[in-house]
Length: 226
Figure 1 (spheres, rainbow, N blue to C red):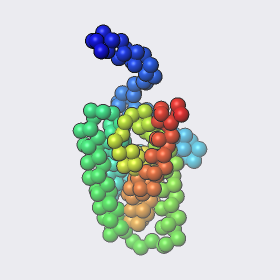
Figure 2 (figure 1 turned 45 degrees about the vertical axis):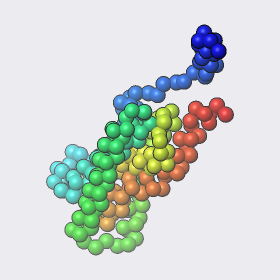
Figure 3 (figure 1 turned 180 degrees about the vertical axis):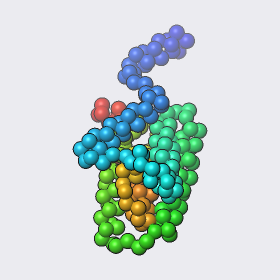
């Protein structure tokens, strides 16, 4: 086979390939995820009348509240960045850094929750679980837009470990939701803070990893074309 015929064959193969849509820039995806989260927070606040208590002096005076706020923010940022970066070839270092940051923040959150438990009075079982479930569900509802946006981005990329990445994405989105809930919730019980706030990202990562992985597979270009 001559060089010319080989070149013609290669050109013919290229012409027959379906067009590939480039994946969006990482920073654009991150801004989109955060923007959808803000819209969800504002919409929920408008419907329920519950808004962040960031203007209250008491909110900023409680060290446990601030420590949990910091941990939730770090988990959300690290996990979202890790999930989005894992879909982009060549951004493995950023994905690892985000994942490590989220992991350290998760340990911090567990410590904050245990700290809150040790420093609070006893709580009734009924009120404890009802309040914790309410905050957990609220956080997950707020996380839905961010989780869907992250999943769509991942479906257009090339995550190497889809199930694990889906769990990280779920944890990041739930961290955003829990961050908003933490600023609106006025319950100060230690077990409530542990179960309803601190553990929310980890619970979401474990429970929703498989559903998000299936959604990412379903939204992939190959699945849509078949």
